[in-house]
Length: 245
Ligand SMILES: C[S@@+](CC[C@H](N)C(=O)[O-])C[C@H]1O[C@@H](n2cnc3c(N)ncnc32)[C@H](O)[C@@H]1O
Image (cartoon, rainbow, N blue to C red; front, top):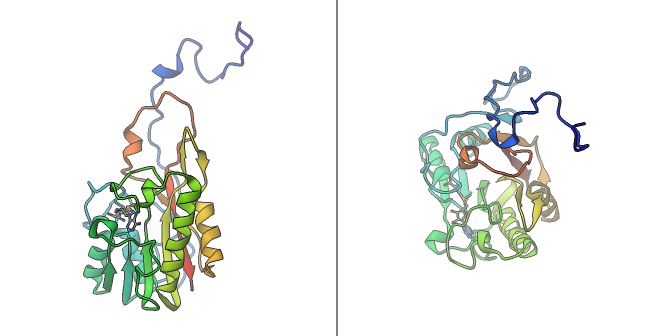
């Protein structure tokens, strides 16, 4: 306890104010051993920590995701035809080009609202890659149909539900839907567990999860370079969930 009666963390000198503390240095984490198995992509595990984004899409596009995880999933599931209805800078499309996978890709930027029931062809794809806005974490267009522009969490979840139903309906039986999503928080809404909501909505749409969650380390995220005055536990990952129709 200090003189004012509040507890003091014994690991910090009392002369160091929180605002002047140096950030913790990056450390290397020792990862668990990968069991030998017959996977065609043995390095693909529940921990995705590849810091190379790969030469796909545009790194300066807001919300851009590296293409290497998409490439590994397409190879793991031996995909020959895929879809990406929120393609942004075309990361998934570029990966498909490289692998010789045919790819149907679109975005609201091209005027196609993936939340509209008629947006996607039905029963056509072996694999659908879906990387939606993490609600309003980043704003993408001025279009009110943009998922990132939905004014309330309920409005976001209603449109997100329809989006997942559309993607599920675009799969052939046995096809897979991979959704990359991160939890979100802001002052007004507090902590919003979007990964939980994604699973709930996917199960409601009749999908089943077909393998482990893939926790993707957020290398290169712009938030990692920001300085915040408030205290919180930084989230350094998002989650790729894979469902089967
Ligand atoms: C997280 S970004 C995808 C980034 C992409 N994976 C990449 O690597 O460039 C989400 C995308 O969803 C698009 N989007 C938002 N609402 C949409 C809607 N209703 N229909 C189609 N696309 C939408 C945005 O324009 C944005 O490009």
